[in-house]
Image (cartoon, rainbow, N blue to C red; front, side, top):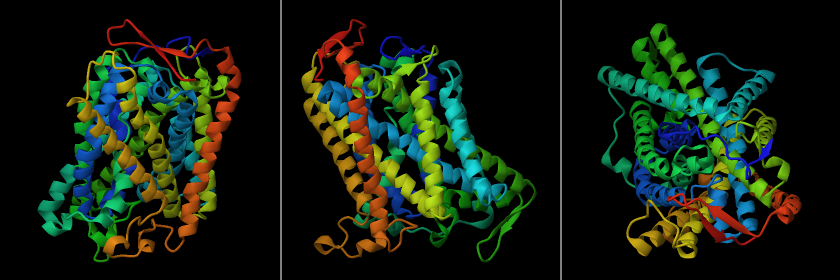
Length: 515
């Protein structure tokens, strides 16, 4: 084992790998149903937030990733801007969201998909299926770069194949059976829709910085990051918008659920190959219809698995860098001879398994509540970390103006401040909307009752839902402080608080870094 700050990992990730990693990180198939469940208005808010958040977010990461292409990405940027303590706490929020997401919504959607298309999983079988899912993700992340690079490639191909099959089947279904009528008024944006949809849409758009977190394993991060961000952004928008629109065109609004919406839409359109939809909405698949459904289900499960692994490849490396830098226990900041942070990967896998077991036990089999609590906590933890990460962009512009930037956010200082305000503001609104669903409903003459906006599975239980968010957030904050305390000895061993940032010209820039 070697410290991540003394031995660089093998550089095996190239532009295609970075693009595949982006598609797996951004196109999370577990949230398609959540957006569709809110009707056509969801597509409108996707477009609005795409312009006001997704675009400036991508531009900022393109500049940061090309100007400061150091292993650890967001941790390094935040440390350069605000010091090691702030960066260390922020990194724990950033890292912990992945095992929570993997053991939460990704795992439950995978289990639900398996039960829907293959076989029920009663009792202990559900826990065993979850353990297999999380174990497979852990093994994939533990692989050397030369092997692990194929995981996001497989995930990207699975997404393209699954969504391509869905679109083709949708066209055939529309010709034979017609589509659900949608009027222009259905797409009209409302404040109520904004409050309900912002967290999940923003979560759909997160992940641009994942390749930068693993920059030490990239062949040429200074060139590959901006190019992959452009292609990944366009591809992600298409891979999100088309299946959501297809789900709305196939299923009536009252049959859309946040957990199973996309799964139900797949079952409905595959009846064109064999099967039928009964008058009560029950779908019966036969022959080729059942076969295509099983293939699509397998693709969906692979897509879910690779979403978690793509994030873990970046987040585990960033956390290992933080630990090696004295912002966490030193023994977690080491890599093996392949450059893989195996120890932090193992901890992540154990945390994901614990989240799965606790959630299944505490929810008493209520998978909808399990899904809701898991996805909400993953989003809020990530959004909290982004508050500081996005703020570091403008701070680095001011603190290190002479670092060469191959790509810059356009329009100078105005463009930089605009991107910062839009992204930080969106994250702040997301956190508040998650902690208090229905935020602002009933204010200033807005019609509605905030209680009506509690997530599925928590109807009438605001205290329980709020506790499911605030208690874990408090525990994550304490964990970050504990990690920093455990890094005290390592910080004393480090030289003067400077960090050498490889500049795009490869000459290096030594910057004074607050400790």
